[in-house]
Structure formats: C-alpha cells, structure tokens
Length: 208
Image (cartoon, rainbow, N blue to C red; front, side, top):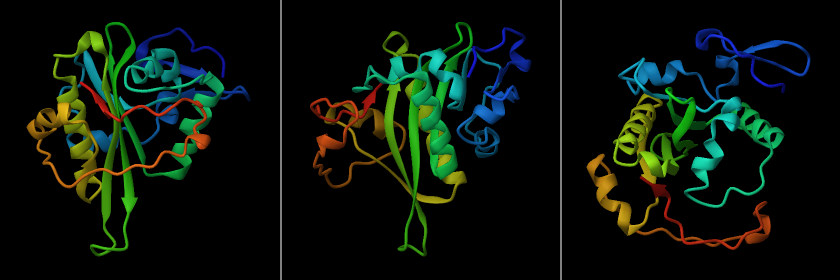
C-alpha cells in the first residue's frame, strides 16, 4: 500500500497496489453497520469513536496500544495488513477499536471471536480477547465502552454466552459490565509456534 492521501476525513482513501482507490469501508475488518445495528455506537461524532479495526490502523498506533498488554513482536505494515485481510476472509473475527479523533490515534482495542458449536442447538459462543486501553487514557471509561460494544455485538450475532479470561485484579471491572466468575482457565503454551519467539508471561488479558 502507498501512504494515505491527505484529504477530508469523510473522503479519506488509499490506493491499492493496482492503482485502485480503496475506501475506509473496504479496509474495515468487518461491516461497520453491525456496530450500528447492535446499538454499540451510541454517540456518533464524539471525540472517542467506536469502530471496526481497519488495515490502515497500523499507522494509527494500534500495535503500540496492544504492546501495553502483551508481546507484539516485530510486525511490519505488510504483515499487519495481510493478517487483517486473512481475518476478514476467514470470518468470525471482530476486532473493535476506539479512536481518539482529536489526534487520529487508536486508544483502545478488544477482540470478539465467534465460535460455532454443535451443542446448544448448534449455537454460537463469543470469546473476548486482548482488551486494552492506552495507559494515558485509563479512567475515561473507555474499557466500559468497548466491552459494552462487544457484548452488544455478540448479542446481535446471536451468541448465547460471552467468555473471557482475566486476572483476579480485573474481576471487579468485568463484574461491573455484567460478567460473572465461572470455573478456571487452563493453559499449555506451545512456544515453538509463537512468531515472536518470546517466553510466555502470565496472562492478564486486559489493561483498563
């Protein structure tokens, strides 16, 4: 991809490798209208905008925010964009971000994964992963906003429950957004499959 064209926000576009003009909707991981229809976006036009991840969020600092949560590794623009496209093609990936429109930066991110089941009438379960808010903006209730967006989206996608793993430290936060403690998490790391090649650290799963 080339650098984004500098123009009015409503007409921002990129040019693809074949010279085709690419709009923001085409760069989004999933259809942004899903957030509107689910009721997740309640204050359009506000400073903090809830929206789907886009391919050009590499330039808006999304990996820097995620690095406050866990190891990101050496991810190039090309690898990032290819991963977003692979997620879009696979389906079932819903990475929601919050952008601070005053500076054009991503300041929060969270992932919703939809698992199709054979049980519960071949129902669907939503898994929440990688919840993080920029350390400079914690206390602005952005964690609440992004979790409410994910739960609303899961409901709209007809998931019958929402699951996540978190540290004991974050339990009170998730209880405030309607989740309850249930059972325990088990894990076995296959570190040889980790592209970052780093030693696993205890999973906290959220920086709020």
